[in-house]
Image (tube, rainbow, N blue to C red; front, top):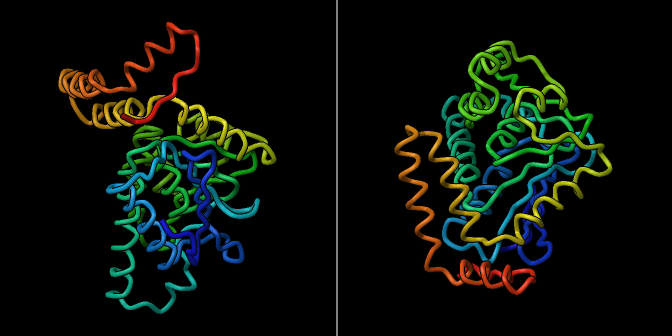
Length: 264
């Protein structure tokens, strides 16, 4: 994976964790066409080559904004065709984030409005700075969420709460987001990234195939009946039985040492 992106930075930590930073601080890390393409390139790469990655953390540059949503300055004056062409990129970006086969954790370090809130909601779970604010404000602009917002927010907070937030465009705090189920943990700003990375490291130390299979079983199972979800879970489980990691995990337990998982 290349490292010279225009609107994001990517940095590898502890061999198995990738930190992706939305990096347009002068524009509150707003999502423009280039950022959409940069995120598509990074996350679609994972569908063919994980390069040993076991977790991804996504955050924003600075301490004021995670992502302020779509860049309305860039969008000003776009023709309908140009708008729809750009939105196809954002749709592809959202699908790439949601399809990430390793755990994706959002570290929301500030305002997460519009597309920024959608990026957070598309992640597997979210840690947020105490001063972070969230909103899906699209209806105030005469549009609606179109990068998974109506689907992922509703699955996180429930239908009634999602309707209230999306139809009103009201902002809400990190504490409210935690109480309603969008955010897993609220952290003081100075400790946000370290808290998120600590969890990412814990995930990365576990069996990587097991983590990927468990993630898929949870996500896909919730879209099925309980009986179909159980069947999917068993298929995912059976994939782990013949792995070297499964044997290493049991051996390490009996030898009273930490397992060394290789993803095999």
